[in-house]
Length: 279
Image 1 (cartoon, rainbow, N blue to C red):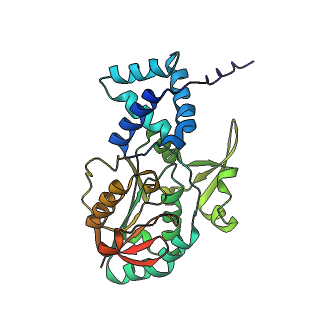
Image 2: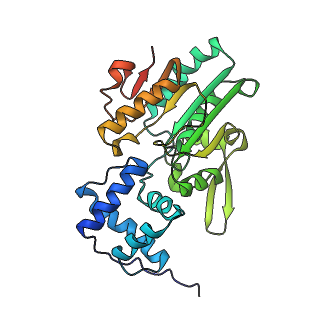
Image 3: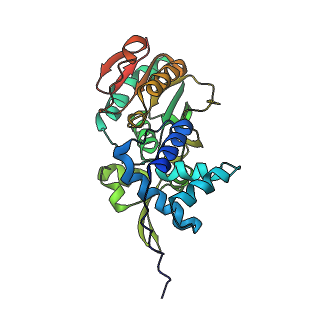
């Protein structure tokens, strides 16, 4: 009989520990962990406490402070990060890519660059790659690349594996599933593997959006959807300005429907909900 996983311990989160965790996560990743996020923080910390064999949050904070390698800080940010996503989420954005962006790019250049910033487990960049394959019949003859980045090594490993369970396939039309996924039997059940011709358009890399960006750009389209809602206003303003610098003239920044970017009205033109264009 296989060994059962140890239960995740319940933890008490005192004000000083919460303040320290909130400050360091905000400084290093830009994520705001207000009082309304205490239960989330407690649940995520409990996972690290169990893995490390510690007794409580105070022990964990001490461990975090003593770790000079920075590895535990990366692990903390990894477990704190929320990674909710799905294939073809907010589908009108992909319709806009197919109906407006791709035709315009096709008439201008054979080089096209896309960036999925905060790509999570890969559904967004793969959805974009499928959209491009569906609407660019000669995509293999063009210079088309999608950069997909995230701060979490855990979700990047999942994305690179490119295998999704049936529940993850709910947003994928049957015709698309047949063309761009392969049904594979695994020990734990059936998974859907993203086809090679889709995967080869996407390159994954770890990137903290608050750090320096090593890529040169420019990008024709940057997706950063439902990411900046976790940042404070100043961080959002800084990121939008940086995104604008990395966009080509006429390029698009696409954010989540629920994200209002007031700063963008000064440097980007509003197109439709969640879509902004660099003049």
